[in-house]
Image 1: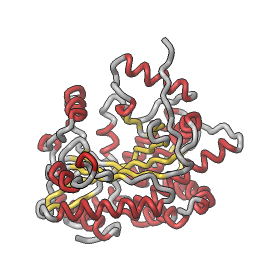
Image 2: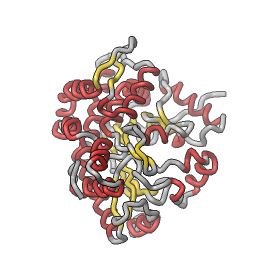
Image 3: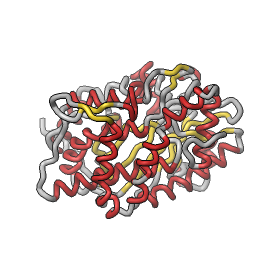
Length: 384
């Protein structure tokens, strides 16, 4: 059988889109609240089909996803996010609710959540059962535009080397249903329960990607490409490489730092292709182990740096990566935002800040309150 062609709608080079999944929480108790349909119904008034273009449903009614339009710079993406977050926050406040962006809610139970009224989600739950019903998780995704399908494959393969770096910086899910998991990112392990989530398969070229997608559809493993939820994937409809490994990130300041890192990484790899370089792709065992190390230890991980198993502190690896990307970031007008990575290294990612609240004698409800305050003030570590 002849392979079905998948059109790649090429984007302007290094264009940027950001998606943030927000949890809706009760301002008093901190519990998750199923209110998305009511809120989105109001926000959608006056828009085509009653749907706000930048605020969407997710799997559960306790979640609202905020997405940007196609942006050129990180600053533009931040402003886009801020406008929609302000609208959603106001709608939440009127209901006694607040927003948090975090990998997992510290104590609410997945069994208590309501699935959103969308046939796509009903079908997902029917097929995946417990693995889907457990997905009380929240993430941030970055789309970076590339000009060709072939580049998207080469860049996605090479990006796997840096997947653990982004995960360690964004890790924000130490707690699951009231218990400390011992992980920096338990969200990443929960999401891997889905059969088409987690680390991507390595493809030699776009033709192999097309063939593999066709095989998955023929095998009834998926119905559409949208059901392939890899940590890094080419997105044919948007013409992007999508980075999906990050936990929910509590502040826009941190989101923009990681957006600058993602945009600069993709552009740096794109330029190397233009220079005639064949991009290196790390061994799959190294990527798998380093992802685990980032999920377990966050910034305290010791990443594997070569095929012989030598290790180096994650912090040192991240500092070296950012230093190397500074010229690219300046050319993309996101040099200032990229310096925010150093701030994350200094004040610690969210998983450390959440545990610090508990170590000071706080409850998990206090952890939620701290997450509400961080988003509202755009200040990591802000007190409620």
